[in-house]
Image 1 (tube, rainbow, N blue to C red):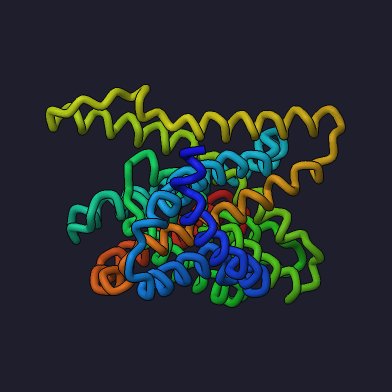
Image 2 (spheres, one colour):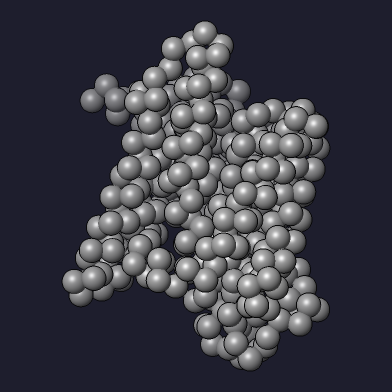
Amino acid sequence: MNFIRKNWKGFLLCLAISVPCWFLGQTFPIIGGPVFGILAGMVITLFITDKSEFQTGITFVSKKILQYAVILLGFGLNLSVILETGKQSLPIIIATISTSLIIAYLLHRLLRVPGKISTLVGVGSSICGGSAIAATAPVIDADDEEVAQAISVIFFFNMLAALLFPSLGALLGFSTTNGEAFGIFAGTAVNDTSSVTAAASTWDSLYGLGSATLDKAVTVKLTRTLAIIPITLVLAFMRTRSSKNEGKKIEFKKIFPMFILYFVLASVITTVATSVGVSADIFTPLKTLSKFFIVLAMTAVGLNTNIVKLIKTGGKPLTLGFFCWIGITVISLLMQRLLGIW
């Protein structure tokens, strides 16, 4: 009862803001509910003079609900399908993820971008946008303003990719009789699922391919999502190592991201269930709930973010995000050429 008493006001505030943002995200998928949520939270918090009675609930939503969203995301992953159809794209995925993380590290050093923001932007760019940021933030102990900064950068380049990549694909001469090449390109070079869907669906519509491009792009994208697991574990281990160098005592088992273990378990449940004949549709409500939880959590992140400070400090993270985006795009195209896909 004490838990409910402390959190209910902040939770209801986040819920009241996130519901309309969820529907806006359904209407404008190229932007997406999480971006509407974080923007609405940042604006509304300017008009709340005293957040003390809401703060514990807002913090609960921005931290715990974010982790629950990642766990539920696992119910959208059928590991057998991903491993079977993702083999072709695996070298491209590894190359693009490595490129983004290396660029993020180098620019962190060269531009002196704060370490946690550069990590979030690098991981978000290379894996799966908001979901990867949601999974990584608790592991590296990023605060809400750092999460908001990373989400804002990822959103900007997501939107550009969704709008520009179909034209780029046509310019580069991707096949218009099947969606394989462009589907792999969209699945490896676009960050967030909503933008991958938008770009792939546009290609299908332009060339009358039904859902061939979309199916390929989403499968590749889900394969990328699995990279959340090793990345978060490595980051947790690195955090314990750096803490030892600073004279602090942080044990790996204490910061081990247990929610990632539950994410894997959810994926295994989905895989086993579908392999014995259970329809994948049974997990659709859980996948939908996962997406709503991300909107809810991003709303709370927005409520904890100073939009004025965000704008003033946004130049370097935006530059970092730009180079990650360009690097991923170039490497995706280069790898497709080397593998004979395009």
